[in-house]
Amino acid sequence: MARPAINAGTAAVDLLREAGVTRVFGLLGGSMLELYDALRARPGIDYVGARHECAAGHMADAWARVTGRPGVVLGAQAGPGVSNLVTAIAEARLAYSPLVVIAGAITREHQGRDTFQEIDQGALLAPICKRSIAVPTPERLPELLDDALRLAMAGRRGPVALQVPRDVFAAEIEGRSMRQPFENLQAGGPSRSQTRALLDMLETAKRPVIVAGGGVKWARAGAALSRLAESLDIPVVAATGHADVLGTRHPLYAGQAGPRGNRVASRLTREADLLLALGTRLGFNSTFHSHDYVTATGRIVQVDIEAAALGRYFPVALGIAADAGAAAEALTDAARARGLDGAPWRDWADAFRAEREGLAAERAAEGRLESSPLHPLRVLAELRDALPERAIVTLDTGAMCLQAADRLHHGPAPSLLAPLDFGLVGFAYAAALGACSAAPERPVVAVMGDGGFGMTLIELATAVQHDLPVVAVVLDNGAWGAEKAYQRDFFGARYLGADLENPPFAEVSRLFGAEGFAVDGPGETGEALRDALARRRPGVVHVKVDRDAMQSLRKDLFRSTRR
Image 1 (cartoon, rainbow, N blue to C red):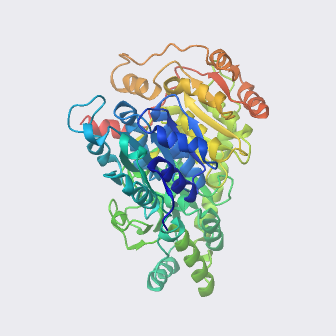
Image 2: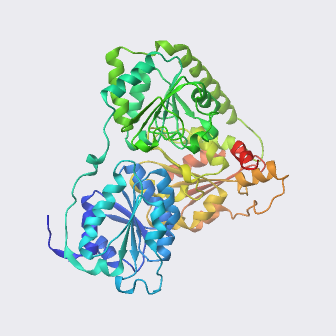
Image 3: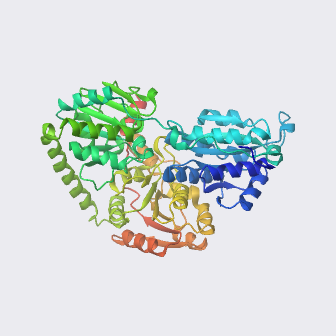
């Protein structure tokens, strides 16, 4: 439906409002001031201004993961403002997060003349987006923005970038409405024949396991997964970085398998005679593409919204291109109708429960470590006990954070935001700010190493300015820990570039106007986190940990690359 003439920047804001976008992120630049002016004039969309475009991109990515709607970031300055977003876009690409980038570009008249801040932004962003779209005329901006929002949300989600020349925003055009709600863009469930085939396999199984991944989270299908697991008494393993698929306190939750996981979950996936991969690619970060972590003799049934993912890394007995939530619901209903229960594999499920109790006891013992300096595992145990039930946790990559993913408690999704396959250090704090923007009623905690926090320290100013009460827990071992562990284990402890000299982060936090807590003794971390969360203000808990307690989490991979 046509609307009265307005400038294209205002038309873009109107379309975002209609799409249900209530917050956008960015850093002010001169390439889209008409859009900024419309954001100020049109109620309904709040703006969070970051101190670096990459951080703004992570905030929008996290907002999308928490809300289930497109996260919008403004690359408001052509050239450097857009190139600063590359890392955040690449992260969203490998997390399958619907990030929509509105990227300012130089005016059409000046293109191709080596103009100030001119780069080929379309070519720069195309490899890391579902699509990089150039807006050729003002009249097409609303249409192509609609396309970008829809494409980001359709099928397997992912980032989409719009390149919008500076003069396009200023031109007057007729506004327009969106074409179709996002809810109508997703796949359905499996066919009846596929459901029957899966039930036939289950009837002959003795050692079934469900491996659930990001597709379950995007479908908001935690409850459906729980009903499926409980009705059949099947253990559930989380794909790496998705420990919140079910809620870690669920009695059928085994934790993460693979190189980032625990021995109980890894045994389940290795010894299963039927592995139901629900909403997961069984990708590298979860499996290393190795039968060390995935059954070599059992049958694999894989459900993914993207048909190209089926059987890509491991051969499957049955591939189902479907929504993970719809598949879980259909399978539960069909199993109940057939009268299928967990009796055939009761010994398998009971053995899992006993092992799970043993692992829980070991991790409880980690919480009683009295070593000085503090052992990271003691810190993680204290965090596990102190985290509120409804907390959202964000993590970086790195040795300590990779251990944290399988040791902390998480509620049902969305409760854990991790860098996933991009393996990014410096993600957690900015992502926490985006998550807090999306769910201000929930406690949000970023767990990071000292290196990653140092990369994003300036965003404390963003947290204070926008009143985002995120608490960062910084585990400080004075090193790039994973890399230093490799230098220790494979290069005779010949260190170069591994050690860090850090400021007192608690004091720095207070200088920004946030809360600051310094921790270096047993029992102090949990207390400090509870205190920080109770104050409902931005804060940092700076925890000094043993710099010699380093663990190489990728030894097998590292050895394979050196043969």
